[in-house]
Image (cartoon, rainbow, N blue to C red; front, side, top):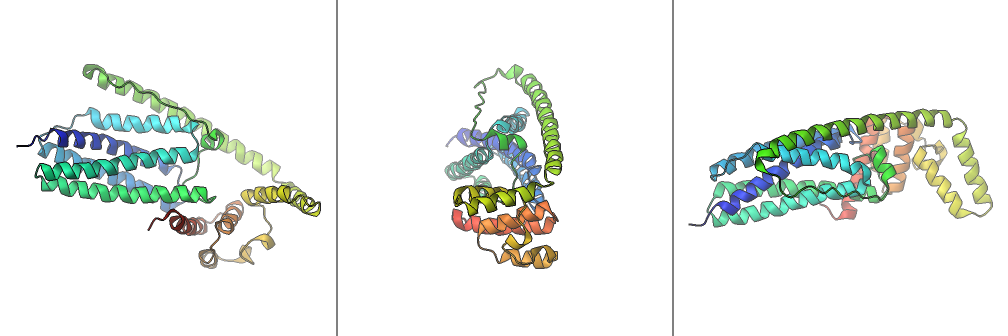
Length: 322
């Protein structure tokens, strides 16, 4: 009879990675651009927790015993990742999320093969569910990356640290082996350190955002007029490159005039009319201009959510995601 040892090893590894996946989904909730995305990420975390319970149940049925360390290591890995990635650019953080999901997808496929060899239909069914879940998440992350590549607005916002990070990369080296008798103590100690570091980073991030908002309010008086004048002068002098750069800055700040928006009379539109008109846009630059203007003026969550959904549809087409 074929040994269940390889299957049990895979179930244990998948359980740890699934715990990491759930914690990452929870850390991404605070980066959600809209309430709809926030709810989706919260549901993703709950779904990952449910998959973890199913994996643990199947592990026991296969003759393995889930240890208490495995889920702790998964959560610890996610906490460390959330802390470390503050020094990594936003797209790199998402690519790391994508790599985790691709690994889980590959392991689910391998688990299915092991289940067939071991004649375990219940494990085969679990593997199928896992593969479907991770394939769906891969498509979602790929869409968010495409949104970012197209200029947004993406479903997730970069943190202040990720905006500053640019292309910097920080590599985290974790010891390969830790003595079993010391592991629980080390995990608990490291987790407390990670919590403290995360709290500190959160406080600094909050202060940075608050200061940024205060500075924006102070500097906004006369800023829009100055930028508009600078763009006009650049175009008059034939400096098209400079004019485009200033125009991009004005779009990013949401300081375009109503006449410059791609939707005529936008400022006077109610939410249903604004959403309808946004769904008719096919250019991500135009959608982005509307979003920045909306966030700088009325900031209606439903309108921003509709705009993000429109960009997501365009991004899915660009990424080849069905």
